Image (cartoon, rainbow, N blue to C red):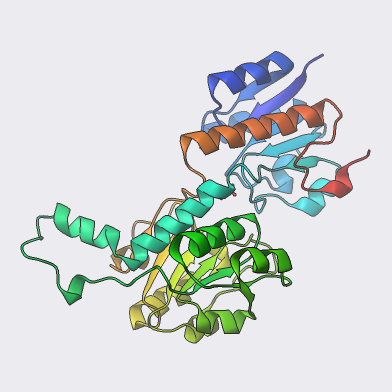
Length: 325
Ligand code: DGY
């Protein structure tokens, strides 16, 4: 008998056909109240779940006593209670690697847009306010040759370092759990303590996952260490940053600008003070959002799920302790 899968993300016809071929699929079209009610109805029979952008808490997962595997279409796994899943021996997989380069591209887009004031000045042109040659009031700041600071030197951090070092001649400093000699050699990067990096980098970029340890890592104390020329970039998770402290630092001119793809609450409230600040470039969590990459992520998730449901260890298993072998 085919296994039951609850799918809460639309897939391309190709991937949909693959999933249908091997499993019974219940598709949850949207994550509104109606969709969630449909999901609750389907969970009691489900062996597999595939989707993203939904906090799957114990209250929801307790409805699925036969659940064997969850394939998340994301690299971040902050929507899951990993200890709970492991205790229940539910295999959780994610989609690393396939989104690394695209997410680093997004990071660099925010670096360039923030430094050169691309959005603010493009809006000025669009509004018909370009009446004469720009002067110092519209000037930005250089990117090439400036110090790139990366907090969290994982795959995406490395891809950002590669762009900065080889593409823009930027000295790279980084902070992570421990020094990474291979990264230092490849990008001539130098390890720094967090306070040292905040004081030294022209661009402070967050590329680390949200965990109990990283939640609220950057707050008032950390912004106070940055300088008035610092540009702050976040492509990790909003909750790594105290957003009130960030707004305060931007308003006070404690830092120069911010490029943000992630926020404490998403979607960002249109009343957020961040959207009233000209020195903020805000994008709607588009780190991996290209046609090619999202398809690759979905394929990776389908592969992981089908492997898990077939009794094989998924390639991107997150909670190895749940694997029975
Ligand atoms: C990821 O894959 O974690 C992206 O941030 C999308 O959530």
